[in-house]
Length: 335
Image (cartoon, rainbow, N blue to C red; front, side, top):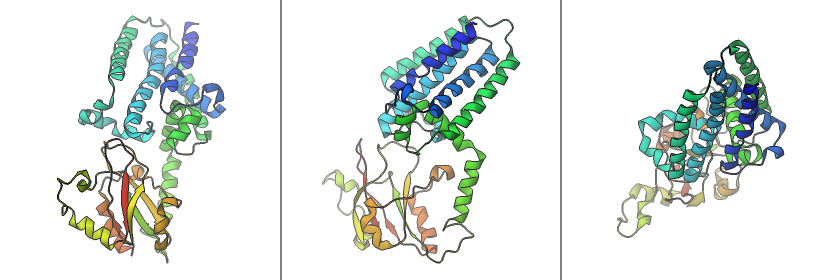
């Protein structure tokens, strides 16, 4: 049957984009069964759904492979700028591509743009030229797509992710990690677990802890000390920043988990400090990385000051950041 042959070819070819996605991942034969099942049954789901709608096997195979290729190209563009592969939460920024195209399109290299153009042309050509099946069993195809979706959802749940995009991708492959993150992140139990953890946390509205930890907010971008650019910048440009650093217990540069300089929202990392004396050892302590993307926090760092004061928290001096492709170094201060 031509449809079966095309499906098998599409499954095999869907691993080719994984080979170009950065960072490089392990070859398919060295991946776990859960990773392979997540990849294979996800591609099969796309194939069967497209075939049920279009009744064109060749077009369905092309769509299934093109989806993995498109995601890999976009991921590489992000990796070249931010040293992080595409993750499912980036889908929330999809609408920004149309509202602010100049913020994203410049990061697509000329070869990638040409490849996308060729892909669109081939997409249209395959749709027009492929022969539809005269009596496609649409009901059976939809049932098969549902079964494949169930299998790859279960496989994604069993995939042992460490929630470090680079490490997960190297071990399990780009497409499998992307799909697993998407499915696991959209599960109602994930949102329920997050809400439960937040309700039991020391900063929930109902909690009244006897001992409140100190909170240090590191803003990874949107600020840098312009005086470091050269003598042409006035030395008295940032008096409040100088006052905060002077009043701080400790002030200095430290490496933060961010790379690049061109992003559309503010990123934060939080340290929960049981004792302020540990501030001197900040680079070496275990950190609690709060999933602020889940809450879509868009406010600047200064917005955290009032709630912190209400809770009797220690203050934070803002940071300094290097620019242009270097890993930023911030001066975080505990006061």
